[in-house]
Length: 254
Ligand code: COA
Image (cartoon, rainbow, N blue to C red; front, side):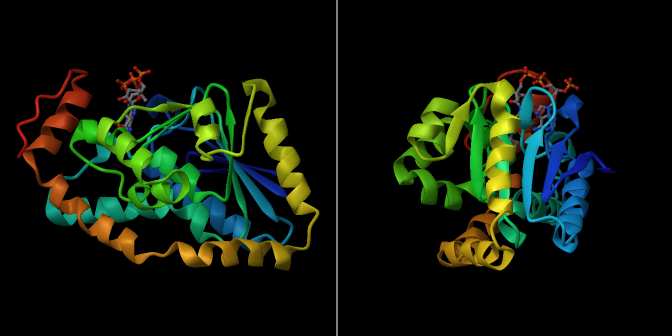
């Protein structure tokens, strides 16, 4: 089955979702956003499914928000951000557990999608980064959730430098549970999903909701509310134009 740009396969009690918009490196394009929404609606209503594994087709897991779809008007930026935000927080907002099998680059909203999932397994080729600063932006969800996983200092370093980290470093920082050779990634993810799927669903659902109960939401609203301001700055226009023109941006701090 396919929901827009998200492939949907069932393997016993496990749903496997594959982001598949490879010409944009699986960035959160309208097709991926809509596909994620519909695929997870299917997961939630299908009583056969207990666990979801999410991965990316090709060389990336997900390259983040769709930079070609940015809208710089205040209302447009807000609507765009809300839509992207719904997509990248989906792992956290569905009731059933989600495992991210991170096959390659997970950047910006791609890293955020991965951290909204309950568990992450990475291929040794995976890299994790929040490069939004190179566009004059910040990762609204990661700024809150990433520090809850890897701590304040490393989160600030990643957000301020925009430099990605390797899968091995992600393991050291507890960002992922396991790093495996890329050809073993799906087997490992499916083995873990299979183990969970053998357990009783009601206890699984409570394990997720009880652990997530303390993680909060207000700080995220604050971070998200500050984004339209950044979208209105000259530096974001320059960052985005430079990305699209494949050149280094020249920021003016305004
Ligand atoms: N949104 C939209 N399109 C994207 C994209 C994104 N986030 N990331 C990559 N693409 C597109 C590129 O524009 C390019 O399209 P083109 O072939 O029409 O020119 C295509 O995907 C391949 O990307 P390219 O940059 O040529 O590949 P690369 O291997 O040289 O670099 C990345 C890969 C991921 C390092 C680089 O594409 C990148 O930095 N992407 C942006 C990541 C980002 O900032 N994410 C957060 C956004 S808020």
